[in-house]
Image 1 (cartoon, rainbow, N blue to C red):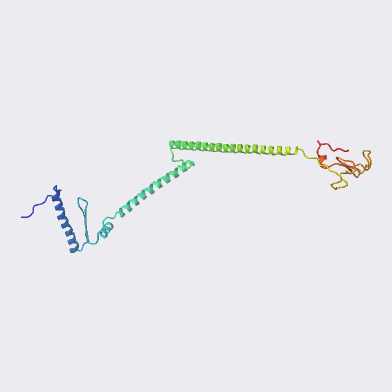
Image 2: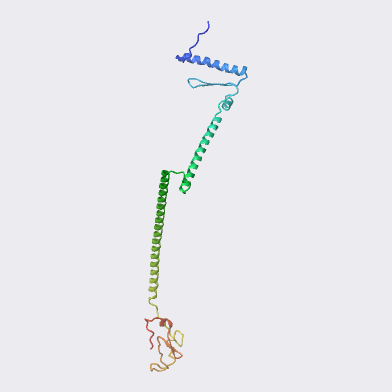
Length: 250
């Protein structure tokens, strides 16, 4: 009697399912080995159990066989290159159409090639030009206002600097004027015939032997200017001071 046909469905009994998995796994690995030996084929077998345990077999090495499989069987490069080429072609077409449209618009804005345009298109073009002109005028006005504000700010700064310089110059002039109006000592000179410390006699006027009617042997004190060669001599420092007394003569 032969075995009956086994229905292909999940075995509900856990023990029977585990036993069946072990038997058929070993048989599958044996068949893979026999195929690789008998037919000189490169066989790679990978099995994961329900618990996630790995079972594998590679006649020429699992890594080598997988790399060969990726190179030969799974080759998405051709499809990706073709898709990329088509994408670039579409992008180039879009850019070319956009470039031509921009060129037409530029010519229309410059007043060229207006013949094919309809009345509505000409009205739209006129509105665009008016809007652009208004924006240009607003921008020009704003720039001029900014420049005026900057010039005013610089003017205020220069005015402040001018005021500071005026105050500084005024203070310096006041200081110099106060120093010039200060009291200065009068220069005077005592003329003595004898410069020795012990001698207290004063020099006589050369043109008067006895100016006060005194005897010749009495000393005479002279303060202020004196005569030299028949002319009066006044120190220059005293002559410059208009508000000072020129001198006293005894």
